[in-house]
Length: 142
Image 1 (cartoon, rainbow, N blue to C red):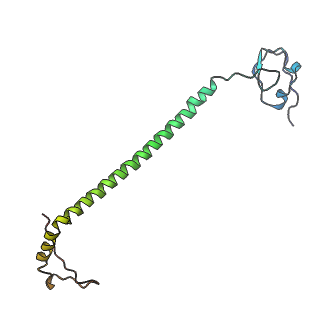
Image 2: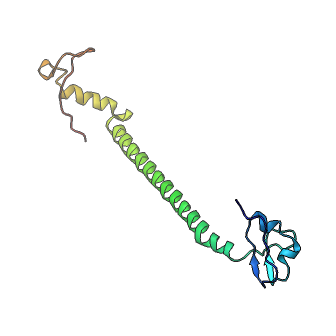
Image 3: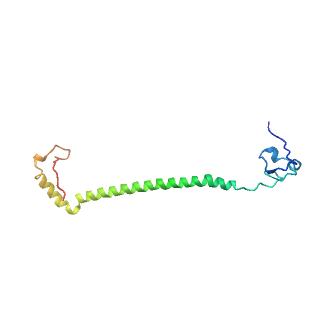
């Protein structure tokens, strides 16, 4: 069951009427002689938008948007820094490899290997590989 008829007349009421079918369809006689009723009824003025809407925006929406923005900035900064560190590490490893195997020093490096392994003498051989005999020797980097 629901409320079907509402009579608010001669009560000096003010404010918004409830948003129910009975108050929306109330006749002029059922709502007459009140100070300032408003609401969703064809015989009443629409209720003015209050400051409550602004309070909801200020208390709920703005902090949520601020938190979301800070979260995006934090995650974006984290990815930016991690990528930058990874690139710097890769560049430093690449530079180190270039320093060891520089194309200008290939002849010198080859000569150092020949000298260190005593022209690939069998006493430096550490086994038999699929493509040859691996030799073990430490090279001094200059």
